[in-house]
Image 1 (cartoon, one colour):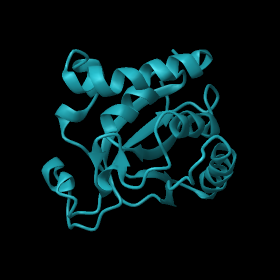
Image 2 (cartoon, helix red, strand yellow; image 1 turned 180 degrees about the vertical axis):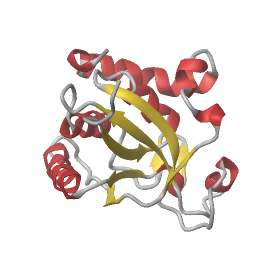
Image 3 (cartoon, helix red, strand yellow; image 1 turned 120 degrees about the vertical axis):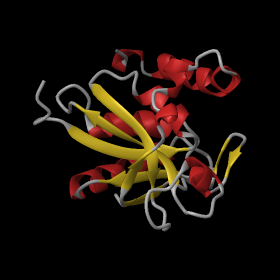
Image 4 (cartoon, helix red, strand yellow; image 1 turned 120 degrees about the horizontal axis):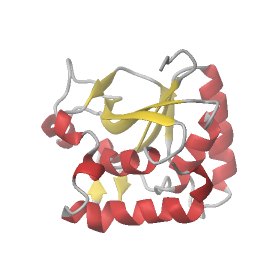
Length: 179
């Protein structure tokens, strides 16, 4: 299958395992890679380095999708409503700058669409949205054991306690967008 009509989106909303598990269930999403972006440490960071909070990287996912099936606005809407974009550097018990809510745009069109989604979605939250919106810096793939984490570890405690509720929320809100 040719990727000539495919687009790429990058965002993070806490632990990349959670965001990956939600987004990879959407029609039109062909590939999701967990990784790191937005830091200032030289070279490719490791999970341990990112978790220290000293590198400045966020845990993010990079999504390859078919815009003829799901568009960028739909991806962002699902992303923005399946995590809490109003908590600074925190999602649930996960705390630190690596867990910040962030949208890294790849071009001016993504930037303007993200700005619009942020405005529209703000109406559904009592607290201000603190999601960072920035141009995509260098993206680094996370270690292999982080890839497809939920699908490979559904009985693990974190998956049962934290990711399962997010997947259930996805199913209740967006059943028409699911594979």
